[in-house]
Length: 284
Image 1 (cartoon, rainbow, N blue to C red):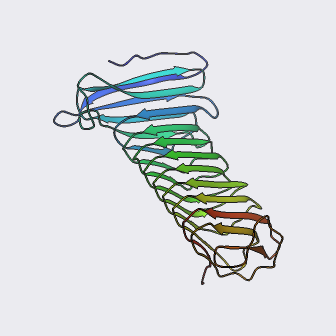
Image 2: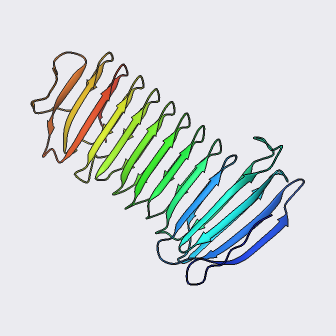
Image 3: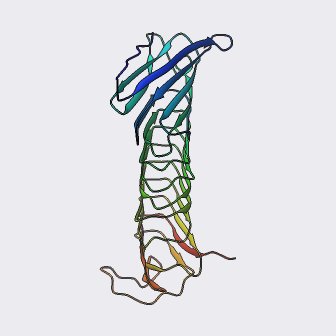
């Protein structure tokens, strides 16, 4: 059962449909009229969530429910839309699955939670917060917002995310950043590998930290960086010719390096306890 609320001059539900969509499945669609920069929240314990930029002032949620052991709860208040997969008694990781496809205004602020389903987000300009346990998380072609990601074991992939305030926390999942830049790009991983391919632009602060995972960063020869790298028990490797700089730790030997390259516009910190650290020069 879905409760439909109506808030004048705020968020208005335009339509709600429920159609049979195959054996044991039900497809539901929700339409909301929203104002500027709405807040949209999707909470889906089991199943994938795909969010893409749509048209201004409209949020469209299409969902496929895989059984009658789960239902959709939705609420709206002012300029906020919340949709939750409500698990009913007897539901599990199979019968509780809901597949979401969501279209939001490009400037919308978004929150997505899924325990095990993949999360895919693209072409947004607002703030993004995602959280999952084993979910793979993809954020593609986004800009100008805060991107906060928390995951236990799921892999994280950010591609072409520009001018972002980015914070990623992962226990065991690998983190891949390609074409990512902004005032702050921070990744903290326990055992997952951190890979970065970009230009360390925007005069930003790039802080990559791992416990046992390896760190690999690839940048062009023209990169403008002030870099410090250290692994307590792992090897470090560097392809750049760096001007020496003073550091709070000993940099000679196989476990650390530090220095500046070009104008040193961006700060780059690469730290690991036992993982291998590589700063590579892109060959092109």
